[in-house]
Length: 417
Image 1 (tube, one colour):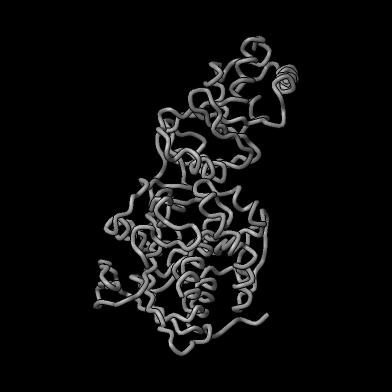
Image 2 (tube, helix red, strand yellow):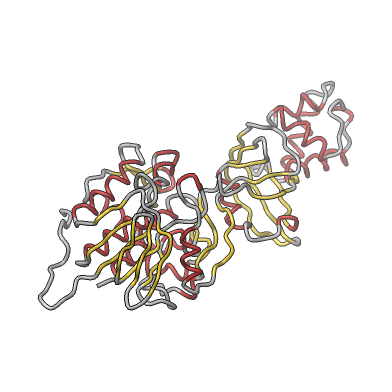
């Protein structure tokens, strides 16, 4: 199927609407395209020197642009705002994002976990594809232009660093607060607040976690279980990979966990790691009995290296209240039980999440109760739309957040006619 290169036909008696899209990222570019395809005259305003600055750094520079899964599975990976997003994701699901990209000349490849990337391996090609699609429909793009204020009278007046623009509709697609170096400095929240909207406080998401104690720096562990509890209740317990760092820990398990606990008091969260999830306690105890018997005259700090990376042996033995120099043949049944517990429930004390400078996305934003889920239009100001990260929606890693940007951007632009 070829790409549609012209907007819908203009009929005599119609007045082409003037649309201003603020923000040239994933949601803004898609919103501009969709609005232009409806036959509107669209101006996209971007304060940076180029479009898609945040797209360039996503997926480690490769851009995991969506997740090739059906809408119902997609929505299971939305942490907040799933009900609000249902209509948008069914209207513009991952399959349509993939179709859009390929129709506009971007070959794709699907990798582990249904993660979709440009075949070229270059995130810049995603931005170029979106820009090319907008250019085909005559979208006017203004770079190095910062929007300072949105005023509403009979029409909108968008005041920028390079003069004022008049518009019938304005789409705010300014992103959140994550990676502020890319221009995500919270402008959209200010525009929303000035328009009378309520904001859910913003916190970092998909980000590393600082711990009271750091150890095993640089060690990556695969196939471990990270569990978070609050007041004895399990909040999350997942199998996967984590990385111990100079500040605490990161890696896929930790990024996922951060999305689930970022709005909770960190002092109330108790974390633990199961280093040996494939072995239940009796089997792990039997393994220790065998190891201690075979190496009965060796010290624990050496014996335990058969079970753990060397830099983790000391912390685990400390958690079990066992000296590193104790010999294998001297370990009692009670001490062995403590060691099993330390291996299966190694305690970690979280301090705080890392900041927006390292967060993949922002959690929080424009309150969903004040935005139409079908059109992304403000319920407080007619003709004002919000899409992408500026909304109080967020998801796990794997291409889900960019898909939310594309879907909400499309719905916003497609609603203006």
